[in-house]
Image 1 (cartoon, rainbow, N blue to C red):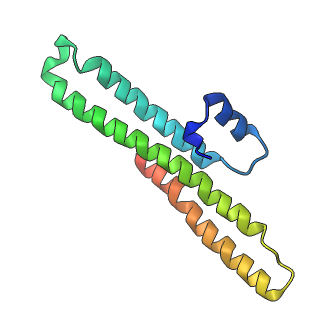
Image 2: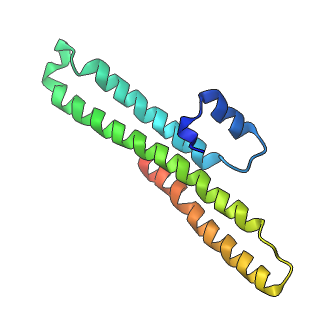
Length: 127
């Protein structure tokens, strides 16, 4: 499921549910995407105004950056949820034998390591 394709109501209902994902990282990434969208909106409202003609090229460059940033935030939102799902799946692995316990533990550790990248990227993009 692509989170970015959900309605606002659908995303908020999923976020409020007992599903383990999406969570904080995806919500933060969505907020970043909305912020970048607002910047793009202001640029579109400003670029062709005669009053700001001398700044048009700068405004268009900022608009392009805002759109790229919005896309990166939305991508991070999807990756954050997917990485957490991998951790959840790892916790569901069998643990009856020592081999299963070792495999489960390794999968959890790999999943946890993968869970760090999207939120760190969101923080970096926000900065």
